[in-house]
Image 1 (tube, rainbow, N blue to C red):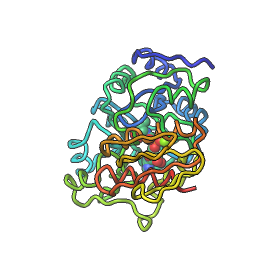
Image 2 (image 1 turned 180 degrees about the vertical axis):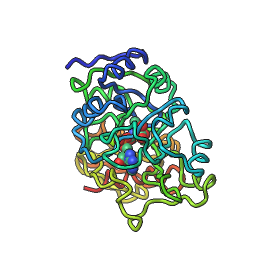
Image 3 (image 1 turned 45 degrees about the vertical axis):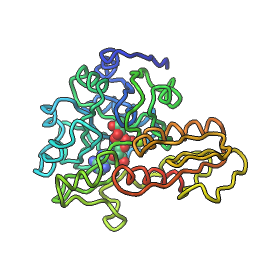
Length: 312
Ligand code: TXA
Ligand code: MG
């Protein structure tokens, strides 16, 4: 299949309206979209990604009026979170409306909904004029792409269209909050932080091992780890370099790493992490040192992704 590259949101939307796939930028990571109400189109997402079909997809919308074609009811705590953080890097899991086919939600009675803030994403969704189901635009088990070039390296020849935008500003996937029960439950940490959510709805909790995994089907899958051995470190004291090594963190270093990314703050660390991992794989780095950060604010999401990358 020939993969068409475009920077025209309307052209990319034509693929969606024809029942085909189009990758598109968002502020978190690039997504791989299909018409959420067309089960045949959505099936193509699972095929292109090699994604297990019991892992549900998020539905993306731009127009709040479309919410009623996606969700059956909107609990009051969900309304508070929507008003505070939407559009932005937040996904709400809500009771599903029947127009959304089983294949999107893996048969669950809930559906994840997200309103991206990225202007290109919004122009694309507006041109689609309907809800778009989209996971991250990587092959299953690979890092989420944060540039259109990374989408090419993942899906060239497997999908008909890539809408080019800038580098994803957040760089980590959205915060996923289950709002289908009495108290909001954070299933995946992201750039909308636990502290921010609790400031709006104080009863918001973080999914722990105790809460169980039944409500978070995606979390049981192995997440991406680079080919290299990933080591999480507090600081660079005592670090010994053997073979090709790389480093990403906040602290400066003079050590002769093959690749070094020193970040000014947590935002930059999050934005650059996945692209750094990709480059390390391309350069066949053997060992990657990642500096740990404090698990508050964006640091909670960053440590979650770092731990997954470090677990083999
Ligand atoms: O930032 C993002 O969320 C990106 C962009 C493209 O929007 N999308 C994304 O999708 O990361 P994906 O499929 O890679 O991750 C979605 C996560 C999965 O862990 C999935 O299991 C979970 O959200 N999820 C989706 N619907 C759910 C539902 N109804 N109940 C529980 N978890 C759900
Ligand atoms: Mg993903």
